[in-house]
Amino acid sequence: MEYRLFGKTGVSVSVLGFGMMRLPILNNDSGQINKAEATRMVRSAIDQGVNYIDTAYGYHKGQSEIFTREVLGDGYREKVFLATKMPTYLVKEETDFERFFQEQKEKLGANRIDMYLLHTLNQERWDLINDLKVIDFLEKKRKAGEIRFFGFSFHDDYPAFETIVNAYDWDFCQIQYNYMDTQVQAGLRGLQLAHDKGMAVIVMEPIKGGKLANPSPKIRSLLSEAQPDWSPAEWALRWVADFPEVSLILSGMSTMAQAEENVKIAKQMKANAFTEKERAAIEKTVALFRSYRQIPCTECGYCQPCPEGVRIPDIFALYNEGMMYDAMASAIAEYRMFFSPDSKADRCVACGKCESLCPQKLPIIELLKQCEESLNP
Image (cartoon, rainbow, N blue to C red; front, side, top):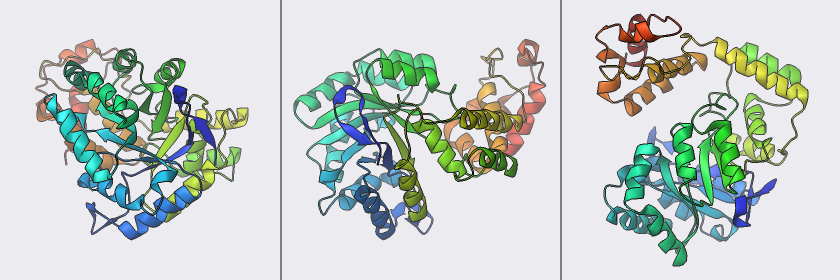
């Protein structure tokens, strides 16, 4: 197993971490974890060198932390770093920090949490919890020995990431990063900024939620020409691991086959190992994926703000992702979950302001109708 320094903390972690968010389930219910199969998967990974287990308050309808306690019995707790996350999206007042933390400790059966994260930070959420003195709370818990290291996971744009990173001397952060998302959210700039400040960087979504694991035959052929022995998922994992700034790659695994493949790959992953031929293959793959986009929106934002509140660039980006990765079902779910009713495409009143401002001269009104039909069937 490849191990890397976890930023300035002095500890070393396996390059692969086991994410407890997509465990095998029963009866198609994410709240019913298939404990027998999941236990076999997690313990097998630990036996082969994985030493980082990542869970969170809300995973598997609140059952993930409870199962994590169970699976880390029989001496397995002492073999790993345990990470969980404060549900910042549920925090309303300062007393919530202590309430959630104690509930999580009880679920995990842990006197100390090794890595504690502020979950899914964006600018708005950070402003709220910062005003509620969340750093004071975390420092108090560290001083008391209840937290060893703390950081945050992030879902917003780069300026928000820079603001949060510069607000405190964090131990680590967790960002979305893969070969299709170098300019999305924190992106490559965020990875480099955090590393330059001595932070460990954990990467989530290295395979983009599985979207890079099953590409078109044309993309699969392109990758195979450069390296016939690697699956598309292995390409994605190795690409992220090639960055020495990355301390750890998280993967949420649902089957024993996935876990075995990822552990096998992790044993071979190294930093700065990609050849020029392999880098060129990834560049061609990115270009080919992007050629599948249906709407040539550059996300410049000139159409914003819409007088009716429609999130035009975000809607176009989500629609494009659904088409690019043949993942419209996932896009529909995201549209329902992350877009408020007053920001959706059906709010458009065809005033035309956006079309007059669009540098690409896109027929935005008609495109929004098309997106609404696909994303809200």
